[in-house]
Amino acid sequence: MSSDASGDTTILSWGLVLLLTVDNPHEVVNPLRLGMRVERTPEPCIMVIAGASGDLCYRKLLPALFGLARSRHLPTGFTILGLARTDMSDDAFRQSTKEALEKEGEDVSGPLWESFAKGLFYQPADYSDPGSFTALGKRLVELDAVRGTCGNRMFYLAVPPSAFSTIINGLGKAGLSRDAFDPSAGDADAKALQGWVRIIIEKPFGRSLASARALQRDVGRAFREDQVYRIDHYLGKETVQNVLALRFANLLFEPVWNRRYIDHVQITVAESLGVEKRGAYYEESGALRDMIQNHLMQVLSIVAMEPPASFKANPVRDETVKLVRAIRPFDAESARTSAVRGQYGRGWVHVTAVPGYREETGVAADSPTETFAAVKLTIDNWRWAGVPFYVRSGKRLSHKLSEVAISFRKLPHLLFADGPQSDVEDNALVIRIQPDEGISLRFEAKLPGPHMILRPVRMDMHYGTAFGGPTTDGYGRLILDALLGDGTLFPRYDWVEASWTLFAPVQEAWKNERPQNFANYEAGTWGPAEARQLLEQDGRRWRRF
Ligand code: BG6
Image (cartoon, rainbow, N blue to C red):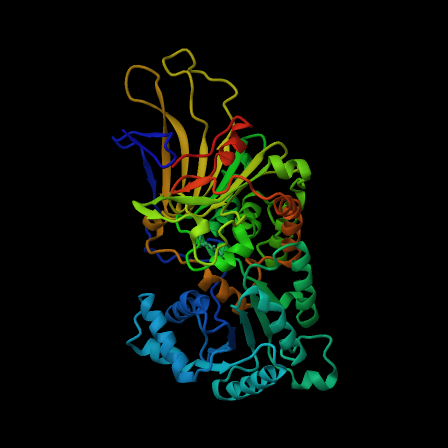
């Protein structure tokens, strides 16, 4: 017998693990049969990446775009214009892109690279200088003529958040944010406007309620809401989207997806990495802002929202906003009892000795920044009243793992109570976001033999086995959606504001009360004792791995 990932379920080695696969993974599936969208190719356009000399651009965006080119999702003439302070020629940008793609394991020796490289251009820019935006405007018009991109522009802000407003204001003042659909453009302007203009804004959108509002004021002055795509790469993950499929493309789950059957929900995003080279950024951020307020809250919204009227941007986003607004607000007392924080000290991760957070580059020796946060949330609506959602995320935990675990209620009556087995495990549905993407359902089965002895077993669906091929990190899918003008998987501003509003009292409490016991967990463990107590006070415990 062996132990499964949760550490508390027995898997019988003689094969009670059931494996679910699609009948034939190579079968050509009609997307309409699955209720999916039929594939479309975006219109030709120029993607202007601000922050083109940065890590995000080279490690995530360019590989994602190259991946889209490989899968033939990019239109003919698709053009990338890199923008950054660094002085660099088009050719130098092509060369550094080539090296970055090679580093990511891409094959850049063939015709695919040749044609991708032809669409790469670069322009140095000082974001605080209005002249840079005038020059950008001219360059865009020139590129339109050469590349046939018809005035369609996608701006991508891959810069530190402190530069968001400066760039947005610069684009607005130079008239680069307005498009042919802009109702406020006068007649003369309208003649000059062509095509569509959209903007993708990286996270974090603000670092508090007040700063999110200030940023939104700038965004709103330059862009209409339907032009804005706030990216949260968790929504691009296949497994997160699969929650939608699980809930709304199956009859089985929705009837039990409520307080009558569910005892509680745990959402975990654990990382074994520390802050790496991002100490300075992380000092300003911490786990609550970096992960919980955005990624984990998006996952929670999809798990807990009501069925939308249709799978279109606004109906889906309306439901996620409603959900966050239904979460019981924190007050001074619950900010203390239902939210806990931690910071890692030295320890061992995968047999390697690692330094404590306060020893990392760019981090203050007495830093109060949390590298772990856990909260208990209560949703005050008919579906979820009384069902706690426990949400946690941390760096330098034992290993990398993200999952949603739905624990079902205890049986109302146990028929087999007088045998040797008087207790049974509760049913649990676990959605593994990463790694080993998939879904498993834990239920009780009879151990073969003359007695009615029960053992928990698992039915397992593995993405790799069912569909073959790896899943992506989400960027490619989200960029493609934005190019197609589909905002379904992008948080709308009212969601962002609702989420900041929810966490404002916790931020406030943590700001006013310096943590006295940091570092309070050893690297390579599952976080501080306070996180354990958060569940123990309710008679529950975190899943063990
Ligand atoms: C980013 C955070 O948004 O997400 C990082 O800023 C974190 O701190 C990362 O490491 C985690 O993403 P993933 O896809 O590796 O789970």
